[in-house]
Length: 406
Image 1 (cartoon, rainbow, N blue to C red):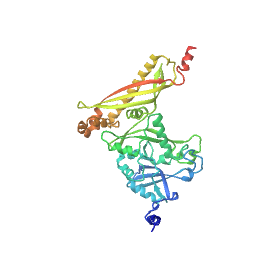
Image 2: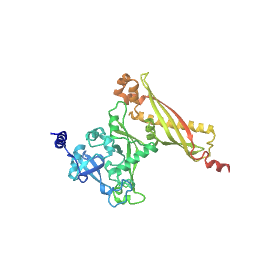
Image 3: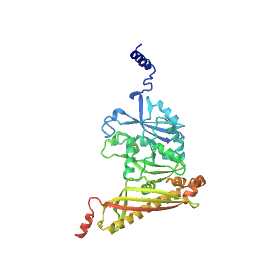
Image 4: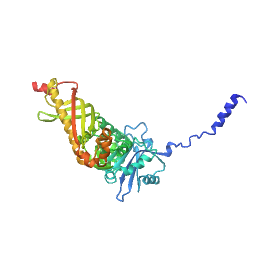
């Protein structure tokens, strides 16, 4: 037998060992999940809400909600004594295989986070091989988690995309929220010396109206989904909510600020000057020489003057130095107030314990068992801030100065 004949025989013989597409699924056999949420009912059962994508109603992209007369998503709610049982019970309502691989949002209700804690429900999500570890996690504030998924949104056809997009932009430009993933939460829960912080979301307006197509066929919606502070956790349970400046302080200490604004009062006017932070670096260090560690927070901020509503000479170097000193004091107080409130809550969301662990592992072994309640709450925390004004926008002095000189 020739070499060519032998090669051909081997090729043909090897075909019989190929498995083929044994696990293939057609699109019309799948129920594509975009988001899931967990609530609890009056009987103490878990209520799992599933947001499914209607492919035919999102043709042409995920933008431009309101272009059709049918919603881009369909929502089902099922109950069970466990998260997994609720998931399996969905088969009685849905005729297709639930497909989690595209789900990028998990919502927990405030009630579940406060009473049961998120530790009990996260395992079911992490253990499922289809669920993305990069799915974002949020806490529903002052509303049921399921209602967040049932509210239709106008610009983003799929509500899950609306939530994720809003989180991304508020973190990028306001510095009052964080994008937190499933793997981030679990990593923090299992770490020594740090507690989770998760962004909150709420419904503004009529909850029932938000579930109707009429809500997104208007130029101004009656109901919207909005970011709503930071959920603060201790030992897996939600214990407090931080809003606006307090939330910004947390994100600043965590070194997650990308851009944000700082307002200064001037000449009797409140928030007369707005400073836009465009670069910042926060470094946390621990001094473990004494029995009680000392934490130092060093902040270096650079930014521009972006709004002026008073007469001020921005050409004068002395004035710029004055502004920089005022900014340093304003940022310092913001961070000190945030640390003080968090110490009162006795939950180390900043990772000071992690820093002590890195600096002195032996000392950390002695402190970790009572870190939150005894040591963290009594830490001496020193805040040092350097702030620099780099630019003043397209003009130096405001037209307020020209008006005053007339």
